View 1 (tube, rainbow, N blue to C red):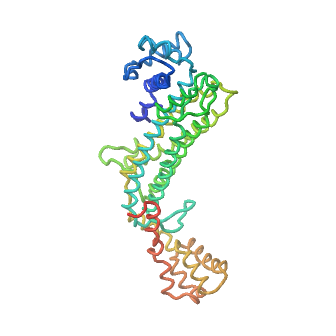
View 2 (view 1 turned 135 degrees about the vertical axis):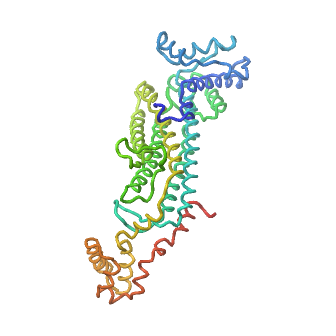
View 3 (view 1 turned 60 degrees about the horizontal axis):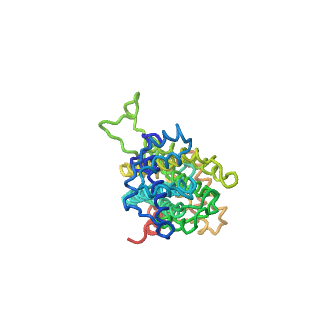
Length: 434
């Protein structure tokens, strides 16, 4: 992933330095497991992991010029640094992917830990904003068309609720990815299975039945979950971009009035650049998910078709979602809302958004079939849509309607507060009782 769309924290998790360091951790954990089980009688220094120096460039040089195999290059680089008595047992009885896949699990778990922090930060921001705008009335839209009133706080609360599900997904996913295998070339245990169990215990992982590699359904689930979370980021961004349209202008991405420029040609422009950027990044994430799904299938117990792809999409997907969540939280924190414009837009259609209440009341008071009452109100509403006449006034002039409904009853149908009477219930469902 290019540095423009990276954070230092996630980039470090997916650096070559960390990858090779995790390989060291796995190899040493296997040695410790053998010692703990009484299968190896050597002394392992407590600081052995830290004492081994990793030079990624040197490992890559050895692979390129000599071995044409990354794990063998790693072993050649690290073995001379071991105490002499340990060198014969370094990687003994293991295959490359005992090291690589178990170490990859450590990377995936560390990535999820960081992503969980990002998700929690977005939840915190959305919760604060939701309560700030809890009772700020806004028009709800379906198909891009005015439907019925909501509140801006309710919109934000529902986004929070979605992120709460993502937090739960990531926690379950962490358990799924935190697995290890020390079961040899085709998963038939060159070493005693107890070594795998003990190694995983040392590393904080769970043993998993595998072939030469850990099944890639786990990788596919990891990347697919990241893509789902990115979908929510996109959903939020598209919503806010819509609300920032000049004709709507109910919310706006923060714009530095002193220094920021929206256009090289038009000095007046204020563009939702962060939310646009994140919308585009979600498309990249979906692509990674499709690629990851294609790695599940392998020839027999192992082929290398997944390897090159994973070297690209696993770091990129992890780094990109981390960037997206980090940028989204910052943009939401600074989000500007325009409550007065929200209220103005509710009444843009001159009362049409209260048509459901009128239709329901007419059916009840007239004892007409619901469809007949619906048609009466629909005809009046559609005429108002075309003529821009005030909906309530048009109803008052209609003798068929007023034959059954009093003026006071009609007035109550247009009470905005009644539309919003369940806001507290929604907030309690989302956030619990305060």
